[in-house]
Length: 140
Image 1 (cartoon, rainbow, N blue to C red):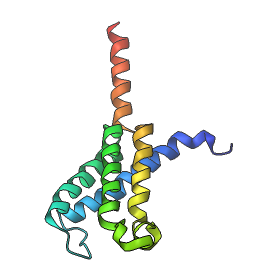
Image 2 (image 1 turned 180 degrees about the vertical axis):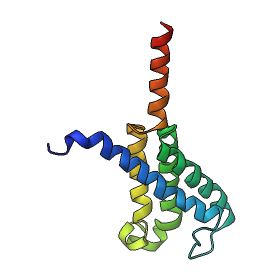
Image 3 (image 1 turned 90 degrees about the vertical axis):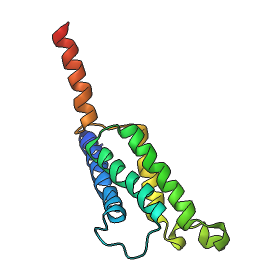
Image 4 (image 1 turned 60 degrees about the vertical axis):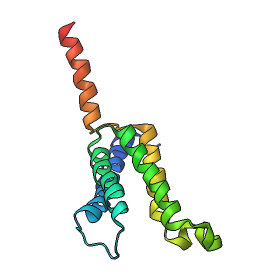
């Protein structure tokens, strides 16, 4: 496999970019930047916006990635069914390509994968675990 040697770096880039892109959904809801193209209900604005902003930052820097990504995945599953996947719309309500829910589905499964896999390299979690290992070596 040609790219197997850079798999840890590619995974770290996937985690960093996913978190970076996700946090902007939170800044849009909480701070109004960039401006949203439509009115966002206050409950969605503060609950979803907070999870997107804080979860995106935690995933991006690789801190508590298992839990942060799991929460983000759940938020996106919820968002899909609330905002896009209404069964009252018939087939259109179930097909992401027809109900504009593709981004929610992609984020849901991307964050589920990140949650299962963890932080990887280039993360605060890796630095913390490395520091713990180094500290145990110096005290032993």
